[in-house]
Picture 1: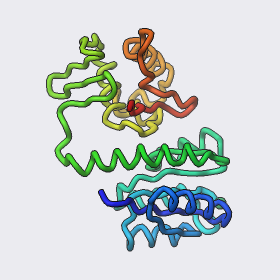
Picture 2: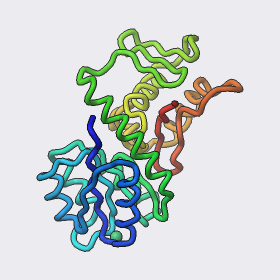
Picture 3: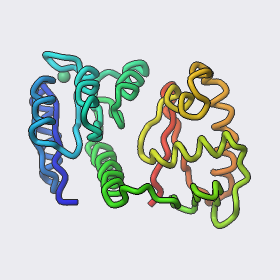
Picture 4: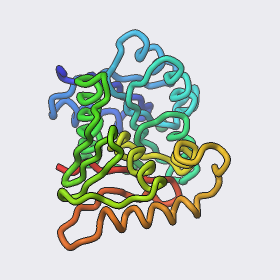
Length: 232
Ligand code: CA
């Protein structure tokens, strides 16, 4: 992949400058949009690789921008917003955002989120046929045989735990909302049963993350959902 083109959607000029200077100094190409309408137009005409999106825009709301772009594009969207309420994050993630940063944000964290997204894009582009084997740190999953291993030892997972693990693994780096996970693992009938999800997640994590030198694989976003971390 050549240097990714990043669309910066932000109406606050100092914040735009901070982001674009950071991107430039780290070798990313960028274009900017100060309104939602311009953002949608730039996405259609310039086909950027990633968008960084402010929610509070002068014309249309950022969540509406996500919904519009998602009607034709799978471009990763990282929301950068001053709205810190969980409901705002959930609304943006459910509309199709891939990640969420709350203002004020650290430049280092923004760069880290962009790197994860770029890696995921590269992976998507290199194998259009999804790989049958997933490896992350000392975790390995063979989707064909339906088995998972940690440090070479087979994990004994219940069918639900295995489905949860596969869903998180296939979306490594992405925050998945409770609603999204419940819909994809249990179907729509249990969509509000966050309590059950928490219990299954706890047992899965115990199997994945026990032992003195083990990594944290699953990150909790309180009130929002979970994310599988990429272990380097
Ligand atoms: Ca704004």
